[in-house]
Length: 153
Image (cartoon, rainbow, N blue to C red; front, side, top):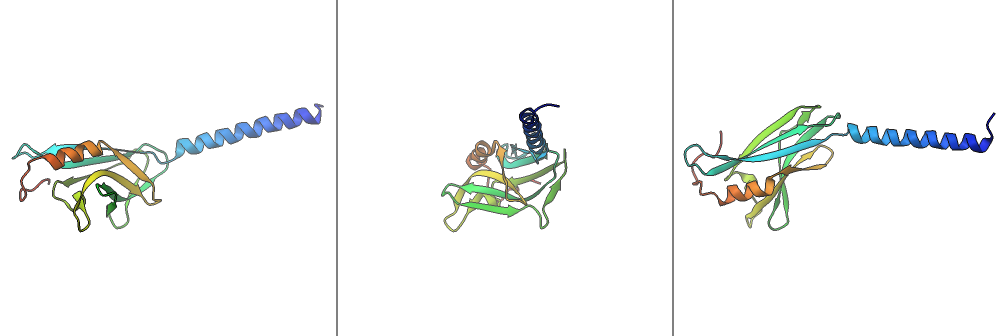
């Protein structure tokens, strides 16, 4: 029979290994949303007129997307509801949306502060950065797409 010190060390090693394994599995199984955006050219004006966003859940846990949010030049934040109940994404499922140069999210507040960056927000309040957001917003903002011509379908 091993002495009590050896048994205590073995128990400590097993519990530490168990804790590490549990933390790793929790980290691996979390919701992992990968979001990207792409500028789209208008077929009649050949100018960038809208931003197409796609988000995919690469994690094992489901995520409920509730908001498309924006960060504005004056430091303020705004957001638009994706739907009343949100969009539930299981593992491997995706969500797509699009907004145009003249849509409401492009400016915020009475002083019309321009959009600088975009993000998605889930039901738990976590923000997911959208890859390429800043660069594509700049492209759309600088395009010469005329007001009054529909930006996207």
